[in-house]
Image 1 (cartoon, rainbow, N blue to C red):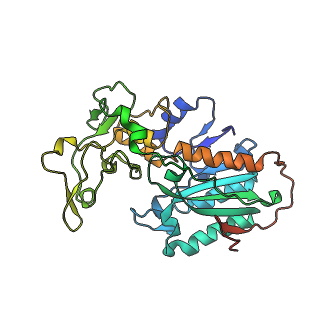
Image 2 (spheres, rainbow, N blue to C red):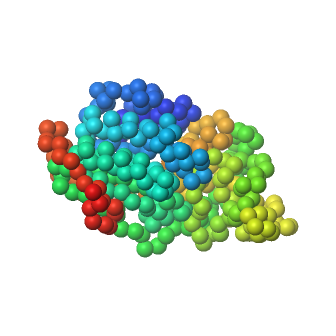
Length: 326
């Protein structure tokens, strides 16, 4: 697969994209202002409409939030370009009972556009990523393919923090709201500062032999480095750092988070404020997870014609591993 067009409205991400993908056109407009005629001929549409409105940690406003409504803009672009397949990614909160009707309407919309839709909750750790990261994956194949997507096989040995960041443990540098001391390894800064009562309400340390906690889109909630002991429970929903070991507790660096997200070390994140680095890493789909999904799609559709003139029949929806739902 080759990326021929990309869209990103957040200006804090533009320099990173252009640095790492210099030959790919980056459309910097809001998706609501983009006409499908502005896109080149495409065989697939891959995207993650903003997930904050569906998040467990957020207000969970779902489709009532303007960001949640961007799913419909995604469907509009899909309808106007009519590619062979699409893939959409979102947080697990979209499956909550309160969002069932809204999510069902989204899936129904994909079906009406002529796609056989498959969806399910997958953990990236099952696909070669050293973190527990559950995400809802929705994949549609145009009905003329007569196929439904099924996810790839899970790995037999799940990677751990030691696999990902052991060699980085002695070279991290603090960042005081921005990179002050240049580390030997690019982006190997960690955010300093205090920890909120919400952060201290549960253990934030995973040990070397475990996968990381989910990498979030912000430095203040980055997991703690596994050099520290597991935080002690001192009261209901209250943890503390082990007395005498306080100096061992630091957040993972941007580069360590990127390693956990399976970015290669030659992928450079460009930012002035270190929080923008954490945001870019945390909002990304883990690279190895994406690669395994893309490889499965490429295998399924190998040799299938991408011609645009076809009879657009209503598709069906099924959950991974289950029979057709509707």
